[in-house]
Amino acid sequence: MSPSELLKPTLYAAEGTAAVPDHPALHGGKCTCGHVFFPMQTYGCEVCGRNGDALQPLRLSGRGKLIATATVHIHAGKPPKPEVKPHEVPFTIGSIALEDGPTVRTLLVGVAGKALKPGTAMVATLVPVGTGAASILDLRFTPAS
Amino acid sequence: MAKTLKDLRPVYVVGAGWHRYQPLSETPYVMLGLPAIRGALADAGIAWTDVESTYFGTGLLGMAAGRAMLKHLGATGRPLVHIENASASGSAAFRHACIEIAAGIADVSLVIGVDKPGVVQRAFTKTGISNLADDAIVPFTHFALLTNEYANKHGVAPEDVALVAVKNHRNGALNPHAHRQQVRTLEEILGGRPVSGTLTALQCCPVGEGAAAVIVVSEDAIKRLGIDPAHAVRVTASAASSERAGAVGAADASITKDTIAEALAQAQIGPRQIDVMELHDAFTIEELQYVEAMGICKPGEAIHLLKEGAFDIGGQCAVSPSGGLIAMGHPIGPTGVGQIGELALQLRGDAGPRQHKGAKVGLAHMVGLGAVCYVHVLQRP
Ligand SMILES: [Zn+2]
Image 1 (cartoon, chains in turn red, brown):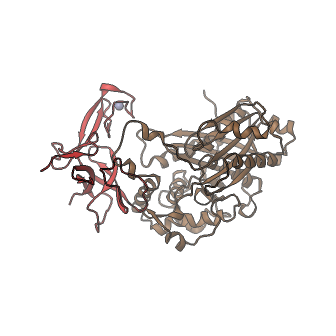
Image 2: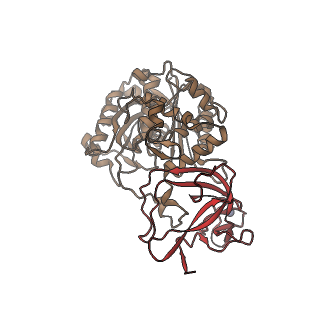
Image 3: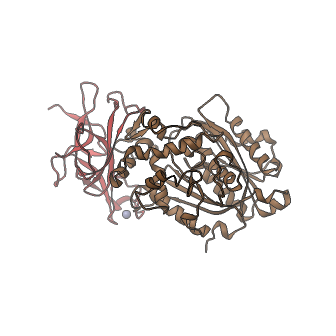
């Protein structure tokens, strides 16, 4: 397998967590007050305001439950760099409540023809998004089964 | 202990003016704002030289728009401040003008909102913290997700949600200041261009250009300037908030719930006493969620009231008789000011073909990206 580059390595890793080893983990964080958040940052905690070392990296499992979906028909945004494919409409966005706490929103794959009921088990997956020879991977969510 | 607006000097809205909300044109912003201000001054029956301070709500014009416009009314040398608060810029400008009058620092203030669509990079994208799909999720998809969640939770069909747009387009067709002035059928709305999820183009607000102005004054000014008291509508509550950690559910609805509750407490009224309200209905789903959040009915029941005509002009409570953001339009800075102007007309009985008869209590509500929320209550004395 040729080496792959992650599009947003500060947000996720190809390796999963111990609990969910087969799906990419998300780079979240945890505050000493107990608040779990995504993405990781040390600016300050949204709940208690502690900053710096009070906020420690916490890898979140790539598993959660679907809250809502929307298939987007109009999109004007450009890709972050020329080596990355633009989002082609229609594409589907999902809100997913991660089992570790935070809610994330991103593109879904593998949902054509599937009933996307709230509560559907979802997992993270990496998909190729490059336009050229180099392999660039970005995170998506997909139904667990 | 901190005071509310009602504990201070009474504040009145005595004039309103607009430049029609419309698609982006060659008209310079100055020539959008000046007709609105001159209209508001004429409506109040006062002169520009009577105005002691100006609050200018704008989100997209860029730095220092105000003096370059106001000097064409005669450069009086009076204070001027610009207020940006995303979609709620005009509502914020209104609140701070009210506070100045209530505090006794001025007797007559102008609130003006002017905007033209322009390229402004949103600061929240420059925090240095990125997210998974910032580039793919714009506001209409945020509200499409909320629509899907609401529809699933309450068993509401997309064609029912679209009924909000039928009502608001019908109201907008009666408003000469509205961006969209055409009655639309449910079929036209559902059959329009798909945007995101079940939202179609006519269920999303148009963001164009325009201007709205209101004049706020003290009792002293009413007496001194000989303003007709029947032309004065009192501001009995001003509440504002921003998103907080740990709130339950969608942020827009949860801050709406808290802020409307605070405003109603200030005015010492209940939600069912509101005769007319202007809501932040940038997308159809919002009207249903906010009507429920303020306690007019239980979650999931707004659609039944809407179908019964409870929110029509002449119904139990006229919701967005101006046409709301969906039909009147959402030029950003003017939007919140225009809501106050519409309520002033309604409470004076001057709203012409869209008059909600006997309106005594009005409520204006705006949400801005971030999220922030503003609620004002206006009452006929
Ligand atoms: Zn904390």
